[in-house]
Length: 43
Image (cartoon, rainbow, N blue to C red; front, side, top):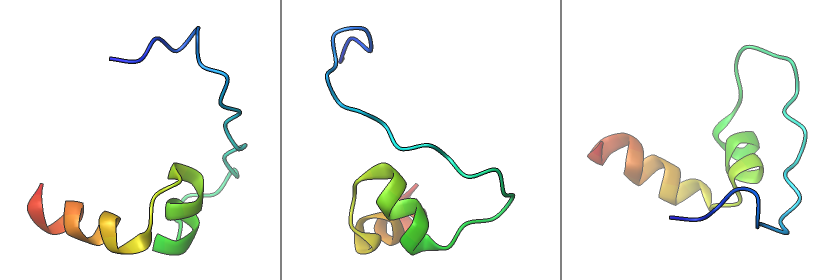
């Protein structure tokens, strides 16, 4: 597992809103939208 203290990755700020489009979530998580859709169906 990654140690959050040793990571040099800068995380984006999460906007203060209740709902997000799958495109917005994919940008925040740095994954492609089809991956999120797969995870949604699988898990």
